[in-house]
Length: 126
Image 1 (cartoon, rainbow, N blue to C red):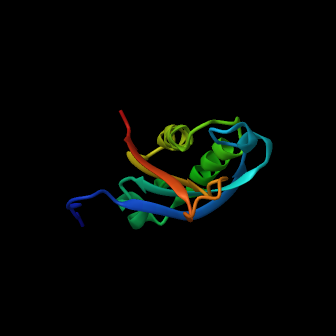
Image 2 (cartoon, rainbow, N blue to C red):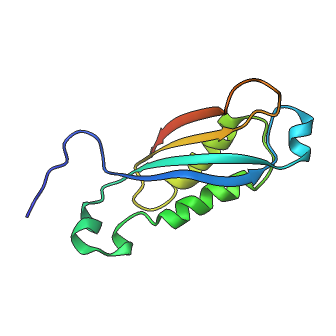
């Protein structure tokens, strides 16, 4: 049986992943770990996995989560944009991933009355 995908590609969504990291534009943000929240929308053709029910035919989202964790828990960066781009690059290196949207958020260290500062980017395989 053949089905045609109409419009957007299939997605694997990972929501609310939480990691501790030392990132920010201020020196104090590099001294103490902060909580970072990461969401991923991974675009891939999921038809083979839907037909086979085999992990080898899909994107292993445990590897995508590990990529996000390695970036957030790794080398300090100044900007959320840099974190999001580094996560996107790693996720795009996984087999079958055609595109990824990455959202990285943190509670600002200052006393600003906002719940979170966040960046969302989308990158596609070249």
